[in-house]
Length: 183
Image (cartoon, rainbow, N blue to C red):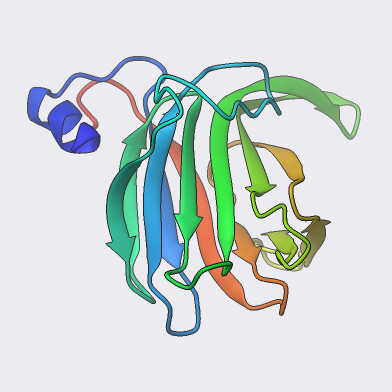
Protein backbone atom coordinates (compact mmCIF):
# COMPACT_ATOMS: atom_id res chain seq x y z
CA UNK A 1 0.00 0.00 0.00
CA UNK A 2 2.88 2.36 0.85
CA UNK A 3 4.37 1.96 -2.63
CA UNK A 4 0.92 2.42 -4.18
CA UNK A 5 0.31 5.70 -2.35
CA UNK A 6 3.68 7.07 -3.42
CA UNK A 7 2.96 6.03 -6.98
CA UNK A 8 -0.49 7.65 -6.94
CA UNK A 9 0.84 11.04 -5.97
CA UNK A 10 4.05 10.76 -8.03
CA UNK A 11 6.03 12.09 -5.09
CA UNK A 12 9.61 10.95 -4.76
CA UNK A 13 12.27 12.32 -2.49
CA UNK A 14 15.97 12.16 -3.21
CA UNK A 15 16.17 9.09 -1.02
CA UNK A 16 13.49 7.01 -2.73
CA UNK A 17 14.62 3.85 -4.48
CA UNK A 18 13.11 0.78 -6.01
CA UNK A 19 14.06 -2.52 -4.42
CA UNK A 20 13.63 -5.42 -6.84
CA UNK A 21 13.18 -8.92 -5.41
CA UNK A 22 12.80 -12.31 -7.03
CA UNK A 23 11.66 -15.47 -5.26
CA UNK A 24 14.17 -18.10 -6.35
CA UNK A 25 13.09 -20.73 -3.83
CA UNK A 26 12.37 -24.29 -4.86
CA UNK A 27 8.56 -24.26 -4.66
CA UNK A 28 7.98 -22.08 -1.58
CA UNK A 29 6.08 -18.82 -1.29
CA UNK A 30 7.85 -16.08 0.66
CA UNK A 31 5.95 -13.65 2.85
CA UNK A 32 7.24 -10.07 2.69
CA UNK A 33 6.82 -7.83 5.75
CA UNK A 34 7.78 -4.19 6.34
CA UNK A 35 9.07 -3.51 9.88
CA UNK A 36 9.62 0.23 9.73
CA UNK A 37 12.21 2.81 8.83
CA UNK A 38 15.21 3.97 10.81
CA UNK A 39 17.98 5.57 8.84
CA UNK A 40 21.53 5.12 10.06
CA UNK A 41 25.09 4.86 8.77
CA UNK A 42 26.13 2.33 6.14
CA UNK A 43 26.04 -1.16 7.62
CA UNK A 44 23.70 -0.19 10.46
CA UNK A 45 20.68 -2.40 11.07
CA UNK A 46 17.98 -1.19 13.40
CA UNK A 47 15.49 -3.71 14.71
CA UNK A 48 12.82 -1.18 15.66
CA UNK A 49 12.12 1.82 13.47
CA UNK A 50 9.00 3.79 12.71
CA UNK A 51 7.07 0.52 12.78
CA UNK A 52 7.20 0.65 16.60
CA UNK A 53 8.00 -3.06 16.84
CA UNK A 54 5.08 -3.98 14.58
CA UNK A 55 5.23 -5.49 11.13
CA UNK A 56 3.04 -4.94 8.08
CA UNK A 57 2.42 -7.82 5.69
CA UNK A 58 3.04 -6.53 2.14
CA UNK A 59 2.57 -9.58 -0.04
CA UNK A 60 3.26 -13.22 -0.75
CA UNK A 61 5.87 -13.76 -3.42
CA UNK A 62 5.38 -17.00 -5.34
CA UNK A 63 8.33 -19.01 -6.73
CA UNK A 64 9.82 -17.40 -9.82
CA UNK A 65 7.92 -14.13 -9.28
CA UNK A 66 9.82 -10.85 -9.49
CA UNK A 67 8.41 -7.78 -7.72
CA UNK A 68 9.50 -4.21 -7.01
CA UNK A 69 8.64 -1.91 -4.11
CA UNK A 70 9.46 1.72 -3.51
CA UNK A 71 11.65 2.06 -0.42
CA UNK A 72 13.51 4.70 1.57
CA UNK A 73 16.86 4.60 3.31
CA UNK A 74 16.37 2.77 6.59
CA UNK A 75 13.47 0.58 5.44
CA UNK A 76 13.67 -2.90 6.95
CA UNK A 77 11.93 -5.88 5.39
CA UNK A 78 11.56 -9.48 6.57
CA UNK A 79 11.05 -12.50 4.32
CA UNK A 80 9.69 -15.83 5.62
CA UNK A 81 8.54 -19.17 4.31
CA UNK A 82 5.21 -20.44 5.67
CA UNK A 83 6.76 -23.27 7.66
CA UNK A 84 7.54 -22.56 11.31
CA UNK A 85 11.27 -22.25 11.83
CA UNK A 86 11.90 -22.17 8.08
CA UNK A 87 13.79 -19.58 6.06
CA UNK A 88 13.76 -16.17 7.79
CA UNK A 89 15.81 -13.17 6.76
CA UNK A 90 15.78 -9.41 7.26
CA UNK A 91 17.06 -6.92 4.71
CA UNK A 92 17.65 -3.23 5.34
CA UNK A 93 18.87 -0.51 2.99
CA UNK A 94 20.99 2.37 4.29
CA UNK A 95 22.91 5.19 2.64
CA UNK A 96 26.22 4.04 1.26
CA UNK A 97 29.55 5.81 1.33
CA UNK A 98 32.62 6.38 -0.80
CA UNK A 99 35.59 4.09 -0.43
CA UNK A 100 38.84 3.37 -2.25
CA UNK A 101 38.82 0.56 -4.80
CA UNK A 102 42.05 -0.21 -6.66
CA UNK A 103 43.47 3.14 -5.53
CA UNK A 104 40.58 5.31 -6.70
CA UNK A 105 37.58 6.75 -4.86
CA UNK A 106 34.34 4.98 -5.73
CA UNK A 107 30.90 6.16 -4.59
CA UNK A 108 28.50 3.48 -3.36
CA UNK A 109 25.09 5.13 -2.87
CA UNK A 110 23.56 2.16 -1.03
CA UNK A 111 24.40 -0.28 1.73
CA UNK A 112 22.45 -3.54 2.05
CA UNK A 113 22.37 -5.25 5.45
CA UNK A 114 21.31 -8.91 5.41
CA UNK A 115 20.43 -10.63 8.70
CA UNK A 116 19.69 -14.25 9.61
CA UNK A 117 16.95 -13.42 12.11
CA UNK A 118 16.44 -16.94 13.43
CA UNK A 119 18.39 -17.12 16.69
CA UNK A 120 17.38 -20.47 18.19
CA UNK A 121 19.78 -23.42 17.93
CA UNK A 122 17.68 -25.10 15.25
CA UNK A 123 17.65 -21.98 13.03
CA UNK A 124 19.64 -22.41 9.86
CA UNK A 125 22.44 -20.16 8.73
CA UNK A 126 22.08 -18.14 5.55
CA UNK A 127 24.51 -17.77 2.70
CA UNK A 128 24.88 -14.50 0.79
CA UNK A 129 25.85 -14.84 -2.86
CA UNK A 130 27.00 -11.74 -4.71
CA UNK A 131 29.02 -10.80 -7.75
CA UNK A 132 29.46 -12.90 -10.84
CA UNK A 133 27.12 -10.63 -12.82
CA UNK A 134 29.69 -9.52 -15.39
CA UNK A 135 31.56 -11.66 -17.93
CA UNK A 136 34.58 -13.41 -16.46
CA UNK A 137 33.65 -12.69 -12.83
CA UNK A 138 32.76 -15.40 -10.37
CA UNK A 139 30.23 -15.11 -7.55
CA UNK A 140 31.43 -14.80 -3.97
CA UNK A 141 29.76 -16.38 -0.95
CA UNK A 142 29.55 -15.36 2.71
CA UNK A 143 27.92 -17.38 5.51
CA UNK A 144 25.66 -15.43 7.85
CA UNK A 145 25.36 -17.28 11.16
CA UNK A 146 22.00 -17.40 12.91
CA UNK A 147 21.21 -14.10 14.61
CA UNK A 148 24.07 -12.33 12.79
CA UNK A 149 24.21 -9.84 9.93
CA UNK A 150 26.45 -8.85 7.02
CA UNK A 151 26.49 -5.49 5.22
CA UNK A 152 27.60 -4.71 1.68
CA UNK A 153 28.08 -1.45 -0.16
CA UNK A 154 26.53 -1.41 -3.62
CA UNK A 155 26.04 0.90 -6.55
CA UNK A 156 22.58 -0.57 -6.95
CA UNK A 157 22.79 -2.65 -10.10
CA UNK A 158 24.47 -5.63 -8.42
CA UNK A 159 22.35 -8.64 -7.54
CA UNK A 160 22.55 -10.21 -4.09
CA UNK A 161 21.00 -13.62 -3.43
CA UNK A 162 20.20 -15.12 -0.04
CA UNK A 163 20.46 -18.90 0.13
CA UNK A 164 19.22 -21.25 2.83
CA UNK A 165 21.41 -23.54 4.93
CA UNK A 166 21.20 -26.17 2.16
CA UNK A 167 22.72 -23.63 -0.28
CA UNK A 168 19.51 -23.32 -2.28
CA UNK A 169 18.74 -19.88 -3.69
CA UNK A 170 15.76 -18.33 -1.88
CA UNK A 171 15.48 -14.65 -2.85
CA UNK A 172 17.51 -12.11 -4.82
CA UNK A 173 17.72 -8.32 -4.39
CA UNK A 174 18.87 -5.35 -6.41
CA UNK A 175 18.27 -1.60 -6.14
CA UNK A 176 17.57 1.27 -8.47
CA UNK A 177 17.68 4.93 -7.48
CA UNK A 178 14.56 6.91 -8.30
CA UNK A 179 14.47 10.55 -9.26
CA UNK A 180 11.36 12.71 -9.40
CA UNK A 181 8.72 11.35 -11.74
CA UNK A 182 10.26 7.87 -11.97
CA UNK A 183 7.72 6.20 -9.71
